[in-house]
Image 1 (cartoon, rainbow, N blue to C red):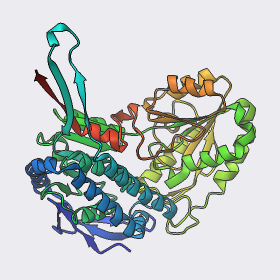
Image 2: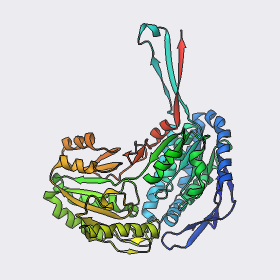
Image 3: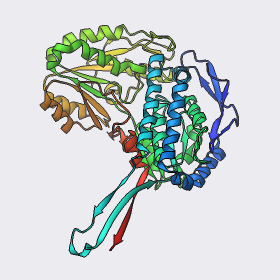
Length: 476
């Protein structure tokens, strides 16, 4: 169970300023715990502490930063079950998915510990013409400075880790606003970080309501804003961020294409499509939302997919057998139910699912959904996928690109030429061959184009954003 109350962390220290933020059990709807809520004064103090601590943080040798990250890895392993249960309660995440996220949290900090001692530079040959004779060049990476980190509700541990761990490895101080619906995991991480030798003021974790958190975005003392969340909010924050660097990891309506040559492995393809579309109730930026299947195998794949989706167990996320748990709120489930209804009215056909009770929405699969309704052109962010047939590979790539999003895409094919063509043509941050676009490991460059964001996560690539290149020129 969760504790009765959790403090926020201000300048490395726990502060039980109040118990104003209620965190609910997303399955029962009951209040599970209460968390200290930061006001503008606390956020200002956290930023000031980060600025004050930046010099000491930058001076920390890489092996000391590595030791901090290794300590976190060890402690997260010791507290594995506690972290998984917290996810299960505050996010409504089925326990198997919750354990998977804790594993990824550990992976992310472990990779950051390795990268902390690899941040190097380069010796440059400047003698490209006679005027540069006798000059030598060198560059290195230095911390960008205090960072603002805003993490989402759907991966409260791992997506926070993809901001915190690279910042520590890079030598940056930071203030974090975790999602107010799911702050507990980040605060447990703060408890672990408080055990380390980070300089006083190096970090603050401050749950706050969105309307009271302008300093996280607008304060010029912060040199980078890293935001993960909805596109509308992300672009609005960028417009307010001023001169600071901005990294955005936003939403998507990920597509998956199943080629005709998959006829010999349809069961395996269906298994991955079900995982990609419905794991953690579809609340992932790279959840499979649009499925394009070649005409020649459409009917048989549809039959098997409907059977598999219809059999997914839904219920209490604490139960080992549960695959579909609650969405993050009743309001979000109602919103997606309206989208399903609208798709049906416009000619779409529900093949299975579609019923809602409270925050619980059945795993739902539709076909023949018009391209201009929300379930196709917007981010569903729930346990819903839409099925289409195609006959021409080049045209289906054009259809996949006909989206304002561009995060990841999946292509099931044995044809290397088609795989390479998809990589060349698709306007996305990543193409996954013979698996779903929902697949991710934590050292790969991850991010999107178009309305799906700016920049890349994946520890090494986040470190690059959190550092600046500093040049040295020496004349003989």
